[in-house]
Image (cartoon, rainbow, N blue to C red):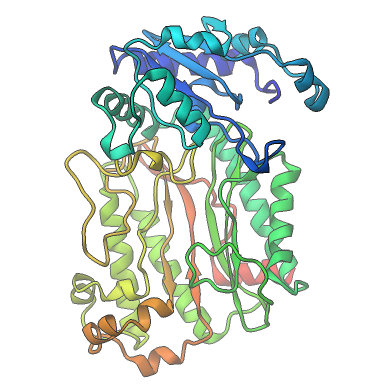
Length: 461
């Protein structure tokens, strides 16, 4: 961990504003742990450290093996000084007092003293197991999954959701930085495609841009010719001239703020006619949703807008039969668009999903059991200051299309012979990051083209 290069007053002031807003929502202390690096296969060989996002929101710096206590607008930092062995192997690091000054802490103590400050405190469980066990031991109570948290922890989690749904100026500035580097990474991937033999070469070109800007992938990058595998993280496949390459890759800043962008492009530099037909259809759904996004609009309605656009387009192409409204009501569109239109974006790429559906679903709402709605990650009314992704897609997923039950259910809805003519399309997704503004929306990733002709030009350049 290194001291931030951002001006201390700006960081400290915004962190202070965040904890003051928390103090307006809870009347008890909250203790948030950062977590620590987890060993890969022996203790000294560890996975890269990533601090808990709830800790980062109030501490601002990725400090390993630390905790903060928040009460009535005050922040107390608990962390140990570097040992002689730490300095030998990892070099000098800022002292506890230096870190406390940068984040505007009111006091700072060794981590071991935290146990004396836990009476009546709420917390949010971290994902990393060793620290989670420490939370359980020191608080002397179980920390169950998000849906079963104790009342005081649920109250803290609800307050965190209320705060983190609406981003402040520092958060938006950080996401703009992540978006800019992500755009450059996708451009590098497109430029590398014509000379690439495998997906891994294109991934390397893209992630090199992130590394060069001292950022990391916000999630396991998806760079694949098998776009029908929604979360594909295998990169060994050969790149053939008639393929589409789907790249879903986003940068994460040093302080944890994420971008999330997907583009799909032809490996030969030009879409075939069938690829272009389906690409333009997905793009039309993408553009319709972005145009509709504004304060007061239900995010679920954006999903249904995409479903309607895709169903209507597939009817026009002869792949589906019937009226678009009826097809969506029957979830026939979900054979080709099984996931939701997007999700919250912030300190996590799927922001606050460690809290289950508490962040994604407004109070009183629950996930639908419908095939076409069950994977919707966000069901809230949009507000200014929220950042969401918009990511419609078209996929030919064998597990869905070859499922006997679904083949029977949708036998009259799908023209299977016509669908076979689009065999050179495994998967297409187009995704951008959208900030909801007081008067509409701003696409934070607008600098990366979506139009097919512009995509082709970038590859051929």
